[in-house]
Amino acid sequence: MPRFAFHAIPLATVKAASVPMADDLQRLLGGAREELVFHVPTDHYLQDESLVSGPPFVEVAWFDRGLEAQDAVARILTDRLREAGCPSVDICFIPLARRGYYEDGRPF
Image (cartoon, rainbow, N blue to C red):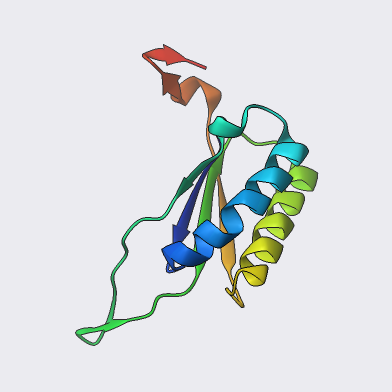
């Protein structure tokens, strides 16, 4: 935890950014590196019955860590994705309730 879903960003771009991104995020947030989950779903975007490129977008599902940490995470994602070739990206944070999150059947 947290989980990062990269939409309309090529797998190669996320892969190129993944190590420095994970380094920065782990340094900022602490915790075990394997708790950082990077997911690149296969997305299809349509407009007027045609496949189109979607807008680069990252969803961050996490337990709220305050605005200072949220701003820092957004900056890390933006900077590292830019360095890997993604010129622009929108980021949305989805706060999770600890009581609504279960690991192996046990609530946080």
